[in-house]
Amino acid sequence: MKKIILLMLLCLITFTSKAQNEIDALLAAGVEDAAQFANDYLMPGTDGLIHSINTNWFNTADAKPLGGFEISIIANAASPTSENKSFLMNSADYNNVQFIQGSQSQMVATVLGHNDPDVIVQVTYDDPIFGQQTEDITLPTGLASENINMIPSAFIQGAIGLGKGIELKARFIPKIDTEDVKFNAYGAGVQVEFTKWLPADKLMPIAISGLVAYTHLDATYNLTESSGIQGEDQRLENDTNTLLLQLIASTKLPVINFYGGLGYIKGESESDMLGTYIVSNGVLTADAIVDPFSVSSEVAAVRGTLGTKLKLGFFRINAEYHFSEFNTYSLGINFGFR
Image (cartoon, rainbow, N blue to C red; front, side):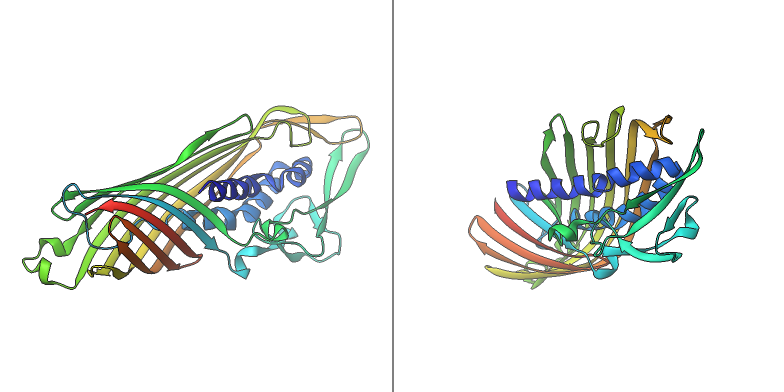
């Protein structure tokens, strides 16, 4: 669990800070250009994160009876496709950025990909003394350059039955608060089993239920020491909120069960580059840019789920796979009584 959380933090920090030095250079060419690149570069990472944190909310459609409970340790991972690892960067969408090769557009790495070979662009800015100046910068590569090809998440989750087919759920990650990183994630959901309301419930071989779940994640990364430019209170803040609607069906067997369903994920992630940045616009002059930009991404996706669960007394283990824009897989270790 600890290793998965550390990997999740690594990915989150990489999403919002891997391009930091290059975005600083783009700031000299204009805040609009820096924001345009940051949005296209980061979006697949935050979209994949939204899919990852919505995994393993359930492991059966059979709601727990009154007083039944389960405690789970959950590890998830979203798998990016090749389409998520690059985007078409068109210099016509930028005010002061051109590819040095002379082409107007080119496929470049997102935060999930890797530029091999390096992609170099030329940025143009106005120097008050020497007039128009240019600088060549190397666009950032992504997680694939470090052989990371997944977007992990992990939670501790609890569920309790309220009777009448109603089950409440809650999940969280232990809060992290250090000088450089602050991280917080939690969620809550309610699952309702419709088959519990039928007279022949105990005779039916399957259970059918619905789930509504909300997840929140926020993180702050202190960049004052690592950004490489002068300034103060430099930081990147991420705020992610998601909603999951899920229809679930499962078998009702004593030891091994199978479950699946159809779900809809709705989520939004916003990343803010905040603080004061003293950006050089020439040999002798510099400008102070405050709170340069915010970028955001939204997800609205349908997904299918297949899973299995092994139950041995109070110990259970489940594994599942989700088919969507980002395919995700998950493993859960569960302890409880029904």
